[in-house]
Image 1 (cartoon, each protein chain N blue to C red):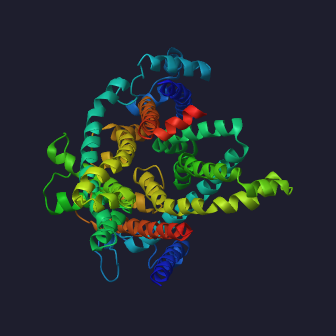
Image 2: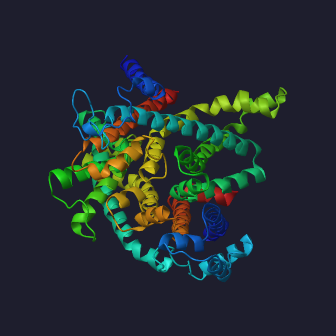
Image 3: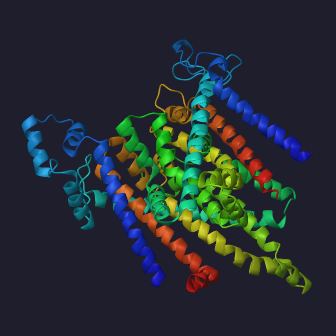
Length: 313
Length: 266
């Protein structure tokens, strides 16, 4: 418990550094709010109005004062309004989250369904034909960029076979298939390998021979002991993937017009919608910090050696 | 014997790809930027092996010239991050203390910051282009190497041969160059070769989103992005650069696996 609090305290400065960096970068990168609004709405405003608007928004204040004002608003949950739509950034961002959460969930489930059985089969048939086929497939999957997979899936499933709509505006069972497949192909390729290595490691241990000598059925050993001990490694790896998926997969989401945070970020970047980009940066930072925290804690939880080592020192 | 064949085949493929990237200009059968609307949207044929695009430009030539940008920028990126990250990592591990803590916090910051946003900010400050995509990816990718290098340095720092070299009067520079670097270079090399494929996909991905190479420069990622609307009617415009990326990434991944197997032998 003490350790967890210590880790959280350590991570707080990181969050502050990220807010500062993102604020500074957006200031360096862009014209200011007023000019950007003008550009996006196409209005022409006189010099006078411009100066007045700038004063109202406090854009002539020193940089640090602006930063602290922004930070203060942020801590009160106020992320400003979008330069493009004029809507509340925080609310817009929250409204895009369910779509990304759904995609994260479906693709992780599909990845588990594909990679765990394939990895186990490959490990059990180590260096046999099946193993080679599975390894070959996972190698192919590892070398395919996801935008290529998306386009090929679109070409085959939507254009040639006409099974699915190319792009559907709303979230439906049909529209979730292609983005899920795209993400799951890349992840399954990676995890099948991992599962295979983990299970192979486990199979080479002495207790397997022991179980065999005692006449325990191989399938029982496999399903009971091997799978359970391999699961620890696999779950930790999956947790890391969930982190990156929650950030919204910018490319896949924007190809399939999937209305999640990844697409929101790409659109915001293309429109130079700085408040929205900052919201995305904060979201990513929070995910990174949480994932790190969870992995740290779960390692300590799952591996007593780390805990003991800490106590002695 | 089998390994020898594998070794020579993969190495040859890697050399061919790098050779094609360097001499792309002379290999191209046609001028990749020459527009000829009278032959627009031709399907792959004997004269145009990968067909032609919207402006009647030869796709094969464009894929070859696009490979120059993709392959060379990837190699450049991996070289930069592996050298820089390794140096930082060794220094952190060797010096330790406050310097180590501060640099590791900075690397945390780089890892936590979304690469897309870095790419955008850099594009906005310096202007778009492949160089800026490389800078953005370099900023978020070097910590991987510094962590590996730091860990390895820490693990050998207290070994007897380092102590012996110190006793024999080696100064820090000599220690780092003669004793630390040769002992940790293997894993770094493996990390770097395995990284080439991933980085190539990252660069192409940024270009695909419009944050890397800008048209008219041909690059695999932006060629696919520009051809997206033609997927239904003229699929070769999209699929040719896609296949090129896939084949190249696959070859470099095989190369990475091979380098790992070779260094793992001990």
